[in-house]
Amino acid sequence: MARMPREEWYEVARDVDWTLTYVDDEAVFPEWMSGTGKVPREAWSKWEEPYKVTYPEYVATQREKESGAYGVKAALQRSSVFDNLDEGWKSVAKAHFGGVAIVEYTAALGELRMARFGLSPKWRTMSVFGALDEIRHTQLSLFFPHELLAKGDPQYDWAHKAYHTNDWGMIAARATFDGMMIGANVVDVAIQLPFTFETGFTNVQFVALASDALDSGDINFANMISSIQTDEARHSQQGGPTLEILMEHDPKRAQWIVDKTFWASARLFSILTGPGMDYYTPLEHRKQSYKEFMQEWIVDQFLRSIQDYGLKKPWYWQEFLDGLETWHHSLHLGVWFWRPTVWWKPQGGVSKAEREWLSEKYPNFEQQFGPIWDQLIANINNGAMEKTLPETLPWLCNFCHLPVGTAAAPNNPKYPVRSYSLTNNGYTYHFCSKVCRQIWWEDRDTQHQTTVIERLLGGEIQPPTVEGILGWMGLTPETMGDDAYNYRWAADYAPAATNGGTLVQGGAKNG
Amino acid sequence: MAEPQPVPINAMFQDDFVTQLALVLDTDTMDEVATKVAHHVVGRRQPDRGLPMVVKYQGKVVPAATTVAEAGIAPLHNVYVEWGTA
Image 1: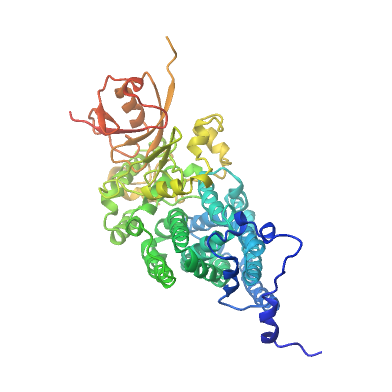
Image 2: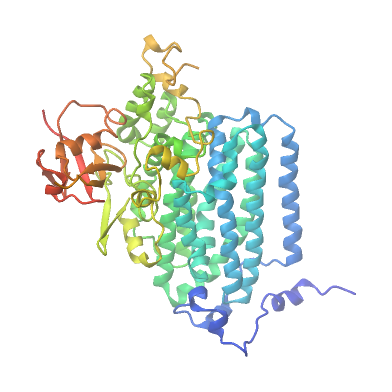
């Protein structure tokens, strides 16, 4: 029997819907899940996906991608490529695996919620493909690091473990992604996840890191994330049609959803991607700074994209631009100082040559962060390692869950290091910025993730000591972070008399 | 006499890059508060300037001998510690 040409059945197949007779529409598509708000029910019939794909076509393409990704992996498994990778670069991959693998599965749940509660059958169909994409990404992001466990590095176990722990970084990630994918109605999910996050920020993580991975020799990682990015580029387009309809009926809501998601994503990426690009990637392999990449992929492209839909720049735009100069430096400093609390080995990245590069890319770097690094370096070179490690916790923002102060910088009069507080119902909350405080206030009914500080003060962490906190976060002596290069970069600064590899144990040595 | 009560505060030390949790007692004087906050910063991320320190609460310097309770500093409140003059 001859097959019906695709164009003859596609339009009908993708638009199959039921006319409900036994139940009300509200029972099947409850408002708290479907979230139509001010958009009339019938307006969703205009939803039109910007790309057309059938299930057989989808499967054929995905099969090809899978063969490619796993084929390269199988070939490299027999090589010594991994053994020769730089330790700093390996930490980029470890941070990525732990921070992203199970979040991909959360995204599958977000897509499935749209596939169930989206108010257009075309949207629901596209979301099924999106969910299959995200399941594939989860599998890739777990399978690729799994083989690295056999290389004797238990930190790769955190690809699977991290999301299920109370590590502070994961609490920050869960707070952001739960709000983006799980807690919101599906109209909000479509604008938060595919539109704001996937059209903008996944580019930073997947395109930028693929490039740095190739330059650093990590072909396997580049191969994996490039394969994932091809799906992201496709299914991210689901957000556009939803946004278009919302803009027609409730532009104020659309603007708010984009604004708050963009800010939350920018804060999170300044720790997930910024340190990897500007500190962990070996200097000779860096093509662009984090700021340059963000300016190209976010500032230029994303801005164009939101303006195409009639959205305005977010109200905090200048503060975000200014933050590209400082946020990730501050967060890198924090991750390095509190290094036992992460599941990777942060590379200090402040040798003399690296600081020169940082100053070239960020003219205020030395003035703002140089004095603190100088003190830390002096402590390393004096063998006072205990003074390079924490005895308390930084205060954490009640919205983004990152340390208060890291949306600012020392010696920065425009954004001084301070806490932005708010007292509500007799309880004092703290925020890293006015923007986090404002978003929290507007959305306070959905903000229930307590910070590590609040859990500590509430008695959830026992004993309430640094060791107790690390254990509560799930870290063990063999997985907690330490300097990637065993502090050898600090030897650049050691006085000549001691610059011969004879410093006290634990301090910096030449070589 | 009542036992001293712990007061967890959100403390910032001059020129540092984050605010931090510091645990003080309601009977601590501002000198003691400054020392407890400085413990987590001075010599770690800031050089010791060898100067006295002052505590600012709600934008004002609190006299060195004033206690936490007398100053009205409550749990979760912000406190700023700065270098004073010799």
